Length: 453
Image 1 (cartoon, rainbow, N blue to C red):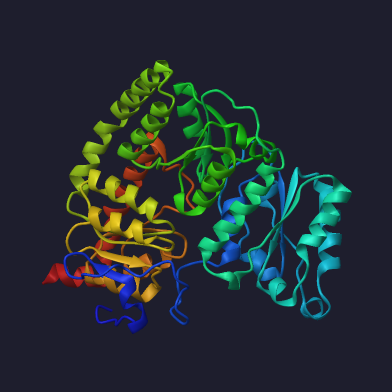
Image 2 (cartoon, rainbow, N blue to C red):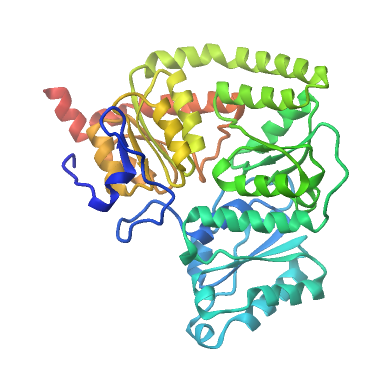
């Protein structure tokens, strides 16, 4: 396993701090045959829009596309759960030949009549782009009949990378916002962008802001509602959590409505505190907000630090590998793991930018491997070479960790507990501790062999 070679065309996508002296190659289409861990354009758009709970989400394409993205994020809702249902036009060979526009129109009219959604998102897939269905025309026709927004999502997979799917979703959200134009400003208000409420994080974060005295106009898109999205232009500030997925929307809103945005993270003690303080500073004309923020942070940190200190005793010196969707999440993970005494030996992302990797390089220790758009063999190679104790990633990385006989922590779509905010840091520390210190890993053959030597 340690002697796995790297494809020549992939060499510039891999950087080792202290050894290599070049700018890592990124923001390119995946190498054919490399079996990238990335998802497609369609999947990228789906993960951003999916948590809007009172909208109809229909995939215009073969049934496989719908099954692949069914319940793609465990996005929790405090009310409607229409988003948890996966609808598809189920295009067949006959539809490919004769076109699927009539099928799409019929499906939309039937579903809108049955479920009464507040809006409908129609996702275009690869085959739809190839056969040339006029999805926009169908959407306009159905919208005229049903009197609700029916929005085409141009997410044909061959258009680019998962990041292009994010952009397609942002364009749709902006379309929805722009229908109401510029709204009257809500005092001391924000939109939270890029938070998807996978384990209930949206509710925790909104509670923090409520205690601070900040009004949250909309969340895009965790526990989202169509009406809230349409009111987004009334906010004074956009707070961008998952920067890779929604920065395009934040920039468009700044250009069109003059709403500034800041990039934050709600993961880990440092970043959560920084996020809350930066929002409070934006509304500095109200001194009470900053005062309430200081009290909130002090109380929350005091509650979790003793437990983290105990966990750190067992985790100090352990090694972790990170591979996530956006590099911004990797920044927070590195800080959190260092807080627990762990060393990061590998850090990578699917959609990182040149600037992201420069920051990542500065945060990592000498010898750390930095990967862009990795594949399973590369991840396995460096995890084995660096002898990692833990792998943090998403659903596609879990099998790699277990096959290699190391612990795994899901920090992406399928987790069931909140990992954001102060309580989230505590949950993360407990999960990492339970995983890394489990006696099961002592029974892995290579560790047994190492113990005998």
